[in-house]
Length: 352
Length: 263
Image 1 (cartoon, chains in turn red, green):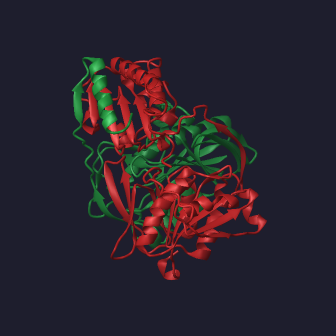
Image 2: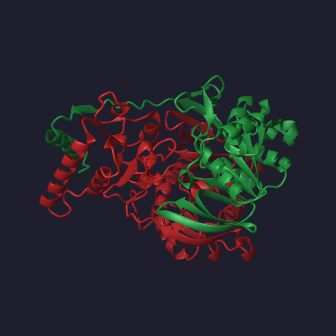
Image 3: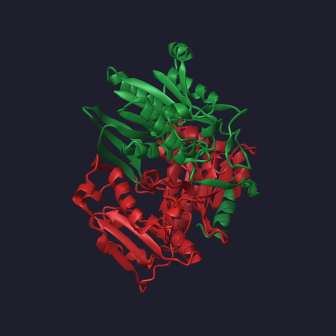
């Protein structure tokens, strides 16, 4: 849609739900949305599509939304990309938001490009920073490309809504305020709109209880320097002790020490944890591309010239196979002697 | 079955430059390769062809004339035809304009049952073009596919690698499938494949050939504008310690983590 087609106003965020429960990324997104809406002196709305969710959206208002648009239908229980995008298109065309942001999750990164194609507007992927240009009032979208080696600032001058997906964990949710008031608007559409070409069959949950690396606060990654699959257990042990998730370099994945879903880097996942521990990883540019936005990086490698040391905050030049066992032992001792909870590792829950 | 694989030629990852004026990537005069994540899409398409008789795979890309090399690489792995959408007016396209150009080209090439793409390209890293093409052609977008369970009789059953697990879904065909790396192990092209790829003529289509109004293509047809490009410094000047005495080093590390309230 062109900006000349009418008056577009308000900031929207796309809420996410799984099994009728609002996901924590929805609250993170509201923190971005609130900032943008305040700068534009406008309202902030969140949109939620699902089944049996309409009673569970108060939290969105408590975390910053002024309005919640909810569409509740059995046809939205699972992610049917065609139907979800079609309903969002209906909402966007009716209410004409100026800005619409979603999380760069598998949901957001699938439904938003479809919506952008249908509504003929721009979409900027995986932003790490959003702002409002004080002069033009346009949304300023900043995103890394080529694995963070380049940052680009992008605008959508003439098309509306201005849309972006935002990297999970790029902002902390606002504190919950139970006294906050807002409006919940339920929209009802005819049943035929909910008929999808895609049918849900089943969800196979990962065995691990650890968070997927894209959402983890703490990641312990291992690479070639661990030498074999058995030694890679040290990475799992350390991750457990720190309450984090396990990552890996491409070499470790190529040698089948760990599945691909754990790979950090250009051909794996981009992560932005609070703490990133790289053990036995030299730090090829492709790996660094995937982890350079970590708040704190600790590196263990026996090659003093390894590039990973350039991007770490604390580096140990030494054999990971000697350092890791010593570290694990010390952490165990601490855990055993410290009183319950006092020295417990930072919670790994997605920021809320 | 008629299959399309969408591929992209990307700069070899450590040799990338950006034009600071336009914010678009400079792809000429540097080493380029087939987007590594597209290899998995090509491989999966070839596997479907091996299972289903009468399958034909067309590799389609939008890019400069040199992108023919990426298409040839895909052909050498077992694809049948190659089409390159190449025109000066296509340059500087964002994901929306790219998807528009690709889908116009596909419409000209006839009906397809399946469109494969990689998860994303390693240069732009958006992953938006596949789902956008699906939307333009009114096909369901099956993204993050890690396994094809079944295919045939006008339907496909896939597993999607999503947060916290895998989701199995069934879709009618035609459909767009973007695959993740865990789906397969791409083959190395053999000599026969390389010879066949060399002999196969890649069809080049211009804006006029795809019947696309130039106002919908390239930079002009792109809703988004890159307004600034900058190179963040990744260097952190951290503390580096010698790990000859593991116990002592670990104490130092724990002190560091303690100062940061991490343990």
